[in-house]
Image (cartoon, rainbow, N blue to C red; front, top):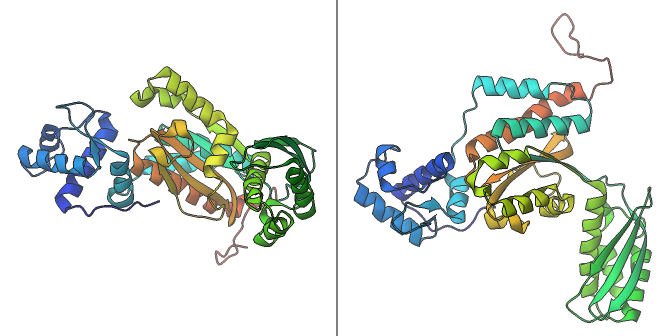
Length: 365
């Protein structure tokens, strides 16, 4: 999720990197004195102050109070993550600890995700969330609609299997009629009843648009709600280490912390936040501040990565913390978690009581 940046000189990059890393460490505004004495920036205080003022004008830094030092802006964090963050050197002890924690009974997907979630929270000292992807077999077997007024109607969806019923109050910005909403239910049952989320395609959507030729924009609005509902039905979200947020001053406001906890614990908020990410995507995603879809998380960062076992996506892990989180360590931890789970896949996928053996030449069989 790279942004468009104004090109910075090497001196500005050096100063910005030092400010971000100092603020991650201390949580306090950073001044020129700290940069010359502690960060050992090889320029005069006057030069550093001028560069900091220019970085503030460019939007990379902010000054919380007059005469105070600077803190990174959201753009500053994004620039740091995209171009300046260095590889975190995980110690041998940390790597061994992570491997040992993951190696305990990895034969079931739920236990793999539980282990990954607990390890991620313990290793980074932030909140960790594990997500299990929706089963592609989930379908809506029947759709019903209930007209309320020209700008509101209820979409009722009866899911296959358990006959779970989900409703969505849909409020289009354009006017709808009772006849149009009735035709919508007919089109949905004709085109999408019994169709899995992975099989909803352009041709099916175009078929519905033909049936609702007088208002094709209604189709896209409703299909979005259907996607959201199918995601909700199949996904599982578990949280570890919510209490870890208490130690960071960014969450000292109790009302804001309570809203943050509710947002994290609300399965639908998190699922909607990551619903656009392709389950086959191997890239680590970083959402800083306002890049998060959950509004209350606009002062936080979420780092997300899909987890694979034997080449198949089994879920995902997300780390949530303040914008000044230790990006190097979090990225190293989440990447190593993914790698270790993939390395364990050969053993985890073997039948019970089966272990790989070697012949006299040392070849696995």
